[in-house]
Length: 394
Ligand code: PLP
Figure 1 (cartoon, protein in one colour):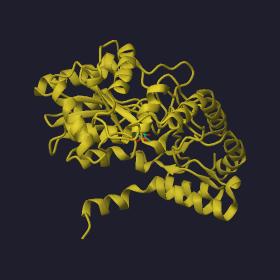
Figure 2 (cartoon, rainbow, N blue to C red):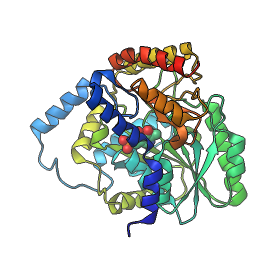
Figure 3 (tube, helix red, strand yellow):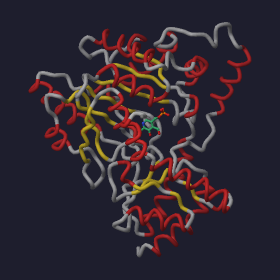
Figure 4 (cartoon, helix red, strand yellow):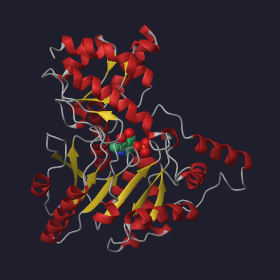
């Protein structure tokens, strides 16, 4: 009756939402302050004050046409500013024609995949991965191919990558800093990845595109620098989002940028604009395009996240949890102390801790904690983690 595929996916894909619902139920029963909900990557800090001030000014002035349609790619002057910023970062010149404004990174990835994929072509995804990649790929007739990262440190395994590339491989999705691990990949690894893509592309006489999903590019700690993929990969497409860097996830604003070094980039960019239109996004929200043009140099206070990371990571590792120290984003991905992560999740619920088991991310032995919650929630949760660790035998 309904789409069989969607109904099947529904059954397998609702782990994060299910935990969120469970959290809502517990909060009703025990009160907000007594439940420690680490399920969703929904930023707790408000947008930067300058961004909010620029928003107020925009709305107040309400220049004529502010709420109208524009080119499906977005406002040319906004794209030009983004192109200039990326040109500075990547050392390769981009113009507004290389940039398409989108409804967040989710919109960006769907636009890219629609523009690139022919039926049956393969998209490589490193596990652990952002849950939606598989569905986004399948949305456009692609086949997701999961390549496990190295367990120690969760860095992509280039030998495994090379082994899985074949004549049908169309793209590789990269996400650094990573959801769910928080790991930021070093430049040398990315350079090595480009060598693999060039070598295998040459072998099969194809182009393998690098899709860089970058919602966490600006959320990094301890002086970590996220290299610009435009500098490293010839066939790079960036999907950026202001959801996390400006705490605007509900406003749906981001962009795609395509490297000028891609062969026939003009046709690809036209295809991106066509995809933005015909997927029904039509264009990214006009008010927030205008706001972004004023806020490109702003971001939320990263120190807040770093403090939360230090607090939670320090406490958990002190208790004996095994966990890679995140260099960015706002997730911890510790190993479950019980072989059965579902049982551990249930045990955590007894302590009013909501976590997400790793199976949805392709790593069933781990669990994710999203620490984009208030510092107070984290502080209050520490005794609950201590009790949980004890019960789990750590
Ligand atoms: N990619 C990753 C890795 C994410 O974690 C998220 C959201 O959490 C997205 C994409 C989607 O972000 P957006 O709100 O910009 O669509």
